[in-house]
Image (cartoon, rainbow, N blue to C red):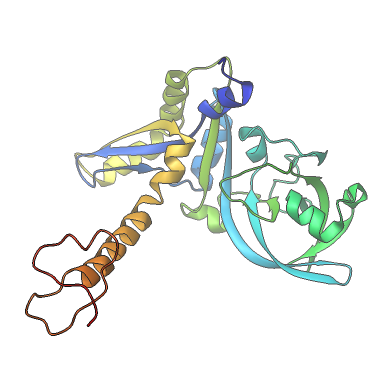
Length: 269
């Protein structure tokens, strides 16, 4: 079967990892602050880049209707990186993503249907988020999936101030059709040269490089510690049920897979 345009785009979506050898060695998803974001945005033409600030619970008010929703804060072009175009309205503009820019919001399809009855005239109307008016500018497709999976999206408006002073942003990128991964990685390392040198100066013997990895790997890697912890907890519970001393006066029902353990009786008498 020939690859689809969607699969082609998905394969070119990525995030950025930081590899440090020597002092304070690690190999993990790079934390992004306001300075690194501006350097990436303005100096890496091989990539379409965007950042997010995570999700938070807020109150939405539309007329008399009030609902608790999850807000995903994203920069301009975040949805472009994911190849998502609103079915109604538009994506965020760069003006809306500048600090102190206009307050705008994009709705998820499910919220648009449940709260606004799939009414297209909601575009251009103001709703209250965090008790502040935001203009609805777009509605995502029904099958839209993002790393944040929020109910509403608002402009991140990233800068070097406030939260941008720390590594509080997650970056996603897409390699442009006329560029290669090698070109993108070379541009990233040039753009962040001074940041790498600053780290190496403060950590003698350290060497820093940056490279792109598929977005799916970047998203799933962050879940591995939690998944491992759940697996260990589940294994401990199974062992508590399965391993009983042969001399114990207590007898238990066996969980599936436990009944073959030698020297144990798992029936209740």
